[in-house]
Structures are given as C-alpha cells and as structure tokens.
Image (cartoon, rainbow, N blue to C red):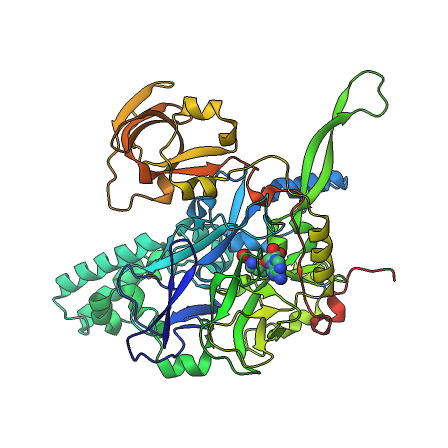
Length: 591
Ligand SMILES: C[S@@+](CC[C@H](N)C(=O)[O-])C[C@H]1O[C@@H](n2cnc3c(N)ncnc32)[C@H](O)[C@@H]1O
C-alpha cells in the first residue's frame, strides 16, 4: 500500500508503505457521542501524542464581514436594525490561529475539516490546532488564478496525548464560545469545572475511604450534589449516580460522563461516513492551485466524501468600500463619502450555488474544498445524502425562512461517476456558467504592471532580514511587515510611553505560539543570525534582544495579499439544477 506524507509546504509525497497495514478508512464522520450535538469526527486508528491527526486544510479568510454588511445597508438605504444571522459565526476561528490577523481590519478564518466538523468538549480536548503555511504557488504577475483561491494551506491538528482507535476527536473552541451560547446549549461544564469535579471526587473518596455504597456514602454524595445545585455547570460535571464514582476517579469525570466516546471499528463502518478517500496535493491543472486526489481505488457509484454544508446567503459575500467623491450639486471641490460595491469575498469560490437562488452552500468536511473543476476529466458528481442527519425538510423552506436556523443541517455527497484509481485527481464539473466565466476571465486577464513580492515569497527566500530603516528605503518591501513570535511579560511595570528591554527566551520548544505574534521592527543585526527588534504596544514599547531568525516572519500589509486583488476571479460552483427545489428559487431571472 502507499503512504501519503504531507510536507511542510502543503504538498504531499507518496511513499510505498513498508507495513502490511490494511487500507481501511482512518477517519469517520458519525453521530457525535455528545447528545444532540449533530455529527462528530472519529479516528479509526490510534494516534500517538503530538502526531499529526490528518491532512492539512485550507484557511479561507473573510474580510470585515460586519463592516461590509453595514456598508451594504447604507448602500441600499436600509435601516441598521434586524441584522440577520450569520451562520459562520458559530464555525470560524480567530484569525490569530490562522496567522491571518494582519490581513484586514477584521478577519474571520474559516477552517474546514476538523476545524468545523469536529465537536468540542471542554473536558476532553484531544486535538490541538497548528498554524497554516502561507504558500507562494500562484504569482499574481504570472497566473490569472492568483487571488481566486486561498494561499493559506496545511492548517492541521496534532494529538494532545495518545488517542485510542475509535475515539471521537474534540478540538478546543474555548470557554467563551460555550459561554456565549448558553441560551441554547445549556450549562455545559467548562474546562475548570471538569478539573474541579475531579478534585471534589478525589476529596470525597478520601473522606469516605471508598465506602460509597453505604447509607452514609450515598447521603454524602446526595449532599454534595445538592451543594452544587446552584452552580449547574459544576453539577453537570459530576456523575449522577454514586456507583459511577470509582470509574470517574480512575479515568476522569469527563470520560465517565460521555460513555459513547470510543466506538468499535464495526460501529464506525456501519454508522460512519469515510472521510479519508481523498487527500490534498498540487493540482494537475496548471494554475489551479491545489486539488483533491484519491487515496485508494474508488469504485464507480461509490461515495467519495460526504459534504455537510453551511447555508449562507449570496448578499453575505458582497464587499463594499467607502470612497470620497465630488459632491454632485456643489460648485467648489466639496466631497462626500459614497458606498461602492467592489467585489465578493474569496469564500464565494468555495461555495455551491444556483443562479435562481439566494442560497449559497459552503461544504466543510475535510479535503472537499480542494476539489477542482474539469469538464472533460470529471469523474465525480454531487447529490443529496440520505443520511438521517440531512434535513430533507429544509428543501421545502425558503432561503429567508432558513435564516432562523442556528446550525448547518444539509448534507450532500460526491459520488464517483467512473472507477477512480489511487492517486488520480478527483474532478467535479462546476457547471457551464463557471466554465464560461473562467474562459472569459482568462482571455481578458492582464497581469498587474508593478512587480510584486508577497510575504509568502519573502518567507520562502529565507534571506537575512533588513533593518527597518533599510526596508523603508526599498520600495519592494512596501507591501510586507515583520511579525515576531515573542512572549511579552505580563507585568509591564513600565509607565505609559516607556520602553522596556527584554531578552528573547521562549518558554517552551514551541517557538511559534500564535498568541505571541506581534508586529515588529528589526533595529539591529548580530552576526550569528540573531536580531534585536522593537514591538510597539498600545501603552508601551518593548525592545527585544537576540531573537532567532526563525521566530521572525514576513506578513502581508493589510488589504494587499492576493485575495484583495479586486479584479481576481470570483464565481461560485454550480449546484446542479436537479438538486435545487422550487422553494429555494427566490431569484427571478428574465429570459
Ligand atoms: C473549491 S476551490 C478548489 C481548490 C483550489 N484549487 C485551492 O487551491 O484552494 C475553487 C477554485 O479553484 C480554482 N480552480 C478550480 N478548478 C480550476 C480549473 N479547472 N482551472 C483553473 N482554476 C481552477 C479556481 O480558483 C476556483 O475558484
């Protein structure tokens, strides 16, 4: 059999696997062990601590969503009341996780796969996110496709502790996520409640000397439950029945309270949908960026991947800008601000849609965002899934009516239209409209006149860094800034406006903690690849001495990376006509 290794740059190399390991599915989508939480992800194979959990994913960054919707209302002269729901709110990550915080004023990072499909459980997090690579595949002066797909790739997760085969994967949404959603999620214990519950149980067992089942043991336990009644998150972190206490002491309360968390291989085969039939790699289509490739032979008619989709509305992808223009009825040079529609979010290129519907469907299972278009080589097609979690009834509701839904509920799947061999690229047909739009776009495309070196290009060159004063004189550095991974001390004793000098000393081996990224300015070079930098915080300035070169990276200046090329290609993929019910056709098109 073959083994696929994902390289740091997001490409995949294939090696003959020495083991006789079977070729069975390694990752499944199935009903989560958490009651009423929809689908979850399960690993069918054990994963060792710190090992990579699955292939890397794209990050698609959304720019200034709230501001664009505000400008849109201004553009249409609508009141600012009744902001409709924005479903991706429940699914996206903070841009610091994706190294995208410098991309725009306000960024939301969409990370499909584990980032959107896996559930979270504050007491059982076993998958930790690692930041993406920013790749320089498509240069804007050479490829019309630059800015039409994301350049953020290979965001992935690693195992936090050994994960047993069959276990559900839980990622960290953070306590705030659960707090903000208390109204409809209820009193879910947060990480500290689980810790506290274990400590309480430990204390209880010491007092009772393991005599839980006696009359006094039961009464003591009831008293304990009564005592935490007013702290429902705490109460929910304790076993309901005293007979479960020994188990909770042994494995931790969170595991005991989630009995279905580990599935057998047979259960997964019977109830799950396989998620690892495809992997990402460099597309065989020149200039198309990355694509999806079969990991094993896929028979004609078989399901290649399930595609749960988030329902969005077309207008939510619109991007606006405020520009100062000459006032119409004024003789002098008076100006006024006017709102202009300047394009669409990059996410549009990853959504399915139909010209007669205001709905857009964004697929968020692993690797499926990599599926490219090829009308002659297409070997896969879309259809609705029959899975019990697919909300068939939503096909009878209008797009406006679906606005009230708080979560995604629709599931599509892609099916092989012929036998596909292992290693073949899987292609969809994005539809005639897409094909025509792309042909026209490429025919009319003009490369930008100015030379351009992106932050990703600069990082790939790995050249010695320039001093800030040198960078300022060189126009080819105009579109980049420097970012340093530095843990700044908490107790900033300095007064407002003061400068504090510290020496770089990463606390752990983990040099690249995404929470410690700051814009920085190189002020001094030492001859052994160490640098002194300055970091300007709101209240004070830090001078950090002896930073290693690896802890400094280039980032694109706000609104300059390829996704902000306003002429870049933007078009959704076609949702086949046969899949679009009448209730969704809310856009009237004059023939
Ligand atoms: C759903 S994404 C596919 C993954 C994408 N190639 C990437 O690297 O992230 C859709 C985008 O991929 C690119 N693409 C897909 N098929 C293509 C083709 N046949 N030719 C050129 N570009 C293509 C276009 O930029 C399109 O908007």
